[in-house]
Length: 238
Image (cartoon, rainbow, N blue to C red):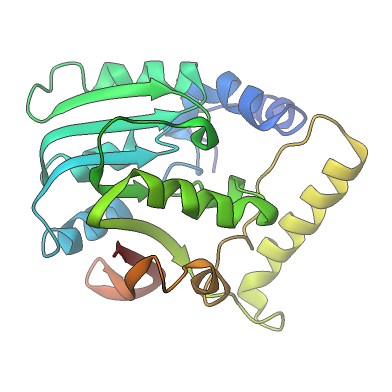
């Protein structure tokens, strides 16, 4: 779990006792060496599938962090990719990675996702590995924000999983983590929002209003040639 270039146990504890934003600000320079980084295999599998849905001219990667999702968008987006995150230190790391990329244009915006406003609409919006940071009472608002930024027939693609049964032993660490986090946030302020049981199937599908979305597809991703528990959801705006 601990990479030589990654954060120490002490640094991880300090992160866990900070607010969500401050925690990621602290880990930014070492984030790519933590187990929290979305694996390249998942990014690549998503990119391979999205090739069949594109091509795309303009795309946004929400909660981009150090830019893991940008890697998957480079081969399928022609003109511009915008990475959005509220942690400037995380974006500073992302900018280093893509400073030499000129086509498509890659730029980054430091902004809370609930405060985003753009003058143009986008063909594709993605989100990798960050949906656990969105409180359940904000999930519908989050989807509405995504909807407002998409052009007609634009697509929102995100990674999630099926909600596990409580009696599945493999799920116990995630239930335990969420329970611990809820206790932590009850007693310690500011809160650090991260729940593995958030934004899961099938519940999340109920938040996509049929009056606004023409289709919502769920794809089982293959990782390394094998079926995984990872699900790619693609919602298309009417």
